[in-house]
Image (tube, rainbow, N blue to C red; front, side, top):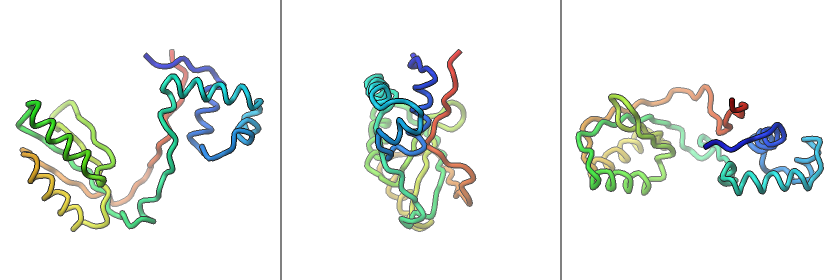
Length: 157
């Protein structure tokens, strides 16, 4: 069940998604509110699980992670043991920055960040040693046109 958010909650969340490094004083000033109500709202949003954690976003290019691959995986195995091995393999690899289970013809999609196509090939070879995969299609992203961690904050009907 989605959390009930009012206009101030949405303003706070939008401001934090833009820049969570601001001090509480600065955040309250930017929102035109006083510090204590803003702090109480943030605490409430954390307690409700709306705010999971605060992190620093790193620039992959600045770290030499220039190659971004999307990996489409189809499997012919759907038993619990295969899934456990697959999940463990993904969790053990920091190159996998996103993983999703899909509906439709493709079972999983991974977003993999590596320094080069060679590094991706090393990742791929290690993965298929650990887990049997029926079909893998890898696509190199030529350019990220839009990338954001900010979620849309629309009113719930």
